[in-house]
Length: 105
Image (tube, rainbow, N blue to C red; front, top):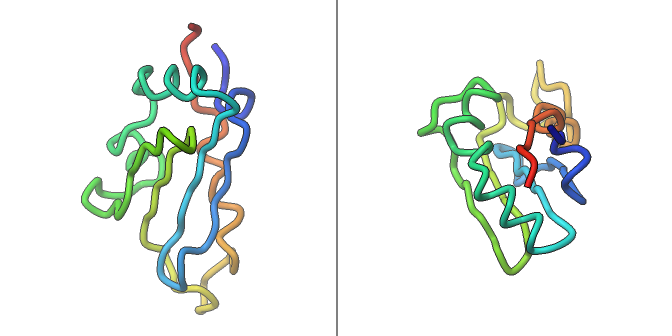
């Protein structure tokens, strides 16, 4: 099986304001995007499990076909810059997504 890190063009996370994190997954082409979405390996439920959240905590989970991407927004565990916060820019939070396995076409 192929892992998401080898399949998607961009996998990133970033701040979406001081209280939220946004994750973006972008694909090179529509065929790869459609295959990933159809494989159903990343759902609200699987994302919540991966990030130890309640499904109801996920603010946004959108498939954006014209951009060949997926956007997910969640609350930050700590507000940006607060005591205990370890990733000021939210740019290191995507790592859990890298090893998601995608079935072959």
